[in-house]
Amino acid sequence: MISFYWHIIFLLAATLAPLVAGAEAITVDDAYARASSKLAKSAAAFMQIKNMSSTQDRLLSVRSDFAKRVELHTHVKSEDGVMKMRRVDGGLALAGNGNLILERGGDHIMFMGLSQPINDGDTIQLVLIFENEGSFEIEIPVHLKEMAASGSRSLTHTHSHTHKNSTKHKHTHTHLD
Image (cartoon, rainbow, N blue to C red; front, side, top):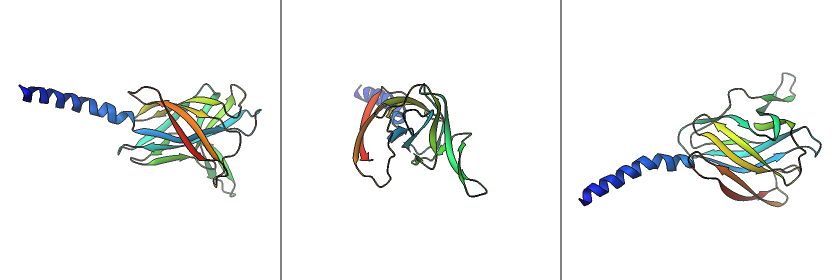
């Protein structure tokens, strides 16, 4: 009889394991949005997206009520050597066990036609849409100051998000600004 119960417990664990493992397959770190001024009509978001799964995924799009249009963008060098921003069609690849870095001068999220004034310290809601993991909700801070790569001061921010098959939860990160 004990063997029967262990068999049931094993089957339940095997059934639930993919749900638990999939819940944390994607993580987001160091996320923030930035605009050039409080009166700006556009803004951008930057972050590091980590794929904790061995399966490749793709960030297909981003939604937000923060702007009329939200697009994935990158920078490309034109024939005359000038860097220009371009919309990315088809999404951004996220390698299995890899990172997707959204940063200034590279791949990033672009907000056009802001729906409200942007203020330093505000937070905005985003929905990241992945090919395999589905929708991923996050809340990120707005920083109007340029984030220096070398870092001149310590900054702590909190973002909250919801994974597929999980509840909303928060993370706090400290990094250099």
